[in-house]
Length: 142
Image (cartoon, rainbow, N blue to C red; front, side):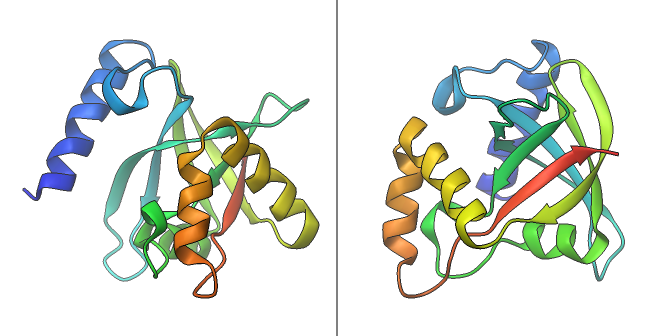
């Protein structure tokens, strides 16, 4: 198992054991576990990721395909967009979500708020400037 997969497996286990709360690098941050199907393999993949809750719609969250500022989009983003739906674990709930990619001013506003709350996201945007725009996805309970 790769180091990243091993780290994710530990975060997922801690999340599930503690009703959606974890320590370490994600301590205090809103976290979901995202399930999606591989667009080529059809296999289920699972990843922990930070999210931004919608201001007024409790069944809507935003996730960010930052890949820690890497020059390419993460595989999970391409898989989720190809499928158009997925499942998230949020706290003690697990539910299906529809997926919509945000664009323009809406995308910029949501990303700016995430970067304000979690400055690492501002650094990711600096790293990708001129290379790619980090996608923002709205996940809404289906």
